Length: 407
Image 1 (cartoon, helix red, strand yellow):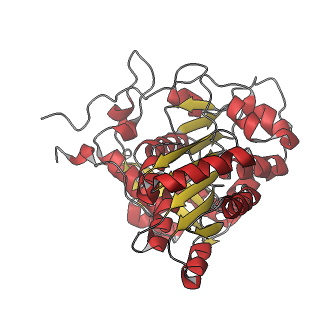
Image 2 (spheres, rainbow, N blue to C red; image 1 turned 180 degrees about the vertical axis):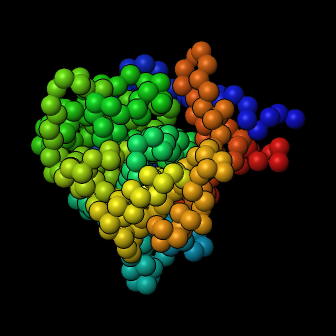
């Protein structure tokens, strides 16, 4: 039997210098040869750019987009499908933000049309198709591309991690959560380290930081997809990192508007934007916390951390509705009998921890060959990360939870 605390395996890396693959202009998933032929004609006439037409209908689309980049315009054939709206909702789960979906089918029903539009479809075209109808629908799809409905107006979720004090493991949790969402839930994830001089996200992932984050925050008017693809560092196929290591001798200044512009651009391209926010009472960092869909406050069981958790809750507000605060107690067990108990912490802070993450230092042992990701291992730490990811996403991992196999 293999030990639960086996040495971590190296993280997956994309080849050096490889940029994130851009999104195709369009993809089409069709159920028959006649539709295939007509779409080829429409694509040529409308000059939609690079794209692919695939036989297989919406079922194939869901399978394919779970593993590949989403296009700007997506055409799906729902002919002969039972519960087509449910299948569209499944499709929305795997699509990246900013996708415009055009559905084609064989049911001419006004009720279905309305339900599909409510589900986020840009247009619905009933067979038999013709070039004029498809051209109009595709033009509608292009008009919707980039809008901020469940599919083409969907934006990624922003999760801000902030420590109640230094040294509680905020960066460790942010990095492992980003890796877990990318590799265990097959989401596209952007990890942003807002500490431009002392941040450790790049170090934890064993990648080389660059000046791209500073460039983006210093020139928010230049932030676009082209800039982001150039300055982000890929770690595997779905995780992309913005992290700098600027000289300590320089005075760095960027605005709250720059942070908001950057995060807004990333939310249009990624399912999750994980932001490691410094514990500094400055407006750019307060804006990052205010924008977040989830604010994860990381504490430990020290008296100082308990005090500062109370202060942090007061500073950032209670969180309400769709923007909750989540208290995470990290390194549980590290202080032994000298630590503040969970009951004492909860009594003082007046909020129950959403997650208690055990202290397992052997998971983070670094050996020759690069950084390690603890969330890739079978351990109680990983179970806690999985539970927190479920809280953030509302969905279990797409891959079998093999790390429980020896339990």
